[in-house]
Image (cartoon, rainbow, N blue to C red; front, side, top):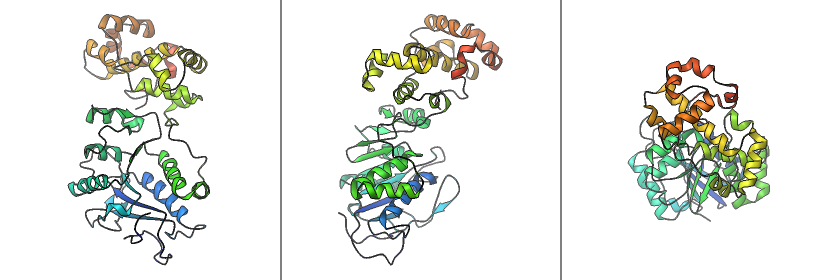
Length: 359
């Protein structure tokens, strides 16, 4: 249990002066995602007191920052800090709320120093939304699994090529590092942490007041765009995500099966039922679909695109491309967008906008 003296309790100052069971410090990045912050803090608020009285009795929280100026969320709303940085050992968790990646630095040097001090003190650090990027940039995720939204999977790989992001789960707990993909997954993580400290009944009460359905587990797949949304089986959905994340370096179907704790025969049966294809065929079509987008929207050579789509050589790529699309890669490039609209009927299931299936 942390210290009773908590600056900036964030709610009714008339609350009883007793030590909270759960104390959380928030660090908001520039252009942070307001929904990620609000989903977490509102569950703390509801868990902290009876009914909807919002007194910080069982839970307390502080919004910390290095500067007195309010922090702007990506939607334009500003949030003021309740305190500067205080002894991190006062908290059970310090939560870094990330947001927009490409609008300048997310946090300043003083914030990075504080997070490093918290890590050195053994305080669990939580990165939600792109808070995982903040922790990685601070060098605080070395050797740790890091959960990233499918939407930012490629951004993460481009910046941290030596890390292996987990983008097929809602959140990942790796010792005293917790990372969450963001969105609705933040509510599920908050529920888990509240249940861990205050019990299941309190955690459920928060969700019920917020009209949230059942809490999802850490291992459940992130919700995805239409193609995966059409697939009911959770195992197939996660397999599709793994495939999308490994287009240039295709995973053997056997490896995907092992990751999902399935046999190769099981995953083949599941894919046949869900897509009408064997997993290897689905995977190949996925890579060819990505290749076609690259042909029509970039100036990369056919050889470069073949490698980017996970084919060993240009001849192998061209043969499979023509078998699926009915024309050679060079003809597809010449035909451009009109050729994509006229693609064979078998491609409708994956004909979605964007360079990648899931982003």
